[in-house]
Length: 323
Image (cartoon, rainbow, N blue to C red; front, side):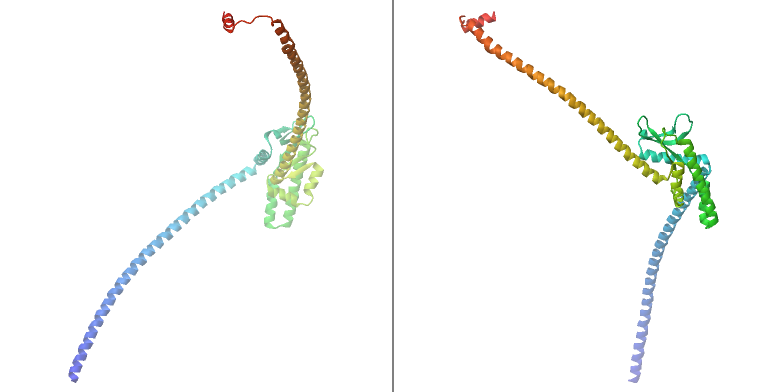
């Protein structure tokens, strides 16, 4: 029995080992298939992700390259602008173009002049002048643009270095340049009664105008001493807008007086028309009275005269009339 049991046990263990070996082989095969599937999916996913990443990187590089090209173009444009601004005449033309654009946007073409004469006996011509209404002729409001770039840029550089001494020196130079421009405008372009007793100094850069306003009392002092009003783009637009409203008010008042005169003339003509109507009515009444006399008295007299005349038969009378 022990031998039989041992024999059966060996057989059982052998069968168990065989099944275990088969199970291991089957498990290895399945794991290999799973690994291949996972590797395949990982490969596809990795390739897709890498492709998307490379595509994204390529688009970003293209955008960066495009931005670098735009920056290069901008740098070239800044260089061109710097060269333009380095020329005094070019700076003047730039300020004149900006001033002209503001005038075109705010006023009608017949409300201002370019390269305008400022009076008899002088050869000076101002860049632009607004035509103000006057009693005998329009009065010109001179507007001249100035751009003291060198003084302003030196002041900006001094602000960057935070050097108080340099800031004070360059600010004094800028104030001196603006006052010199205001003095030139007063001497050249203010000639009452052909012009107003004041003029406008236009600074084409808002930061430059703000720097002038930063100095306490400077704008007021220039206005009192030189009769010149310092403005920037925004301030000049507001002033021109106010002038435009004044022009419209004057136009409305002028039209109102014209309408009142027309109404007075219409009233006079209407009175004459009433007199003519009254005379015509009188004539019509006289004509009506004459018709009454003609139809009444004369008709009765004719009837009395024809009373004794014998009437013909209708057929004979028609025949006679036809003949």
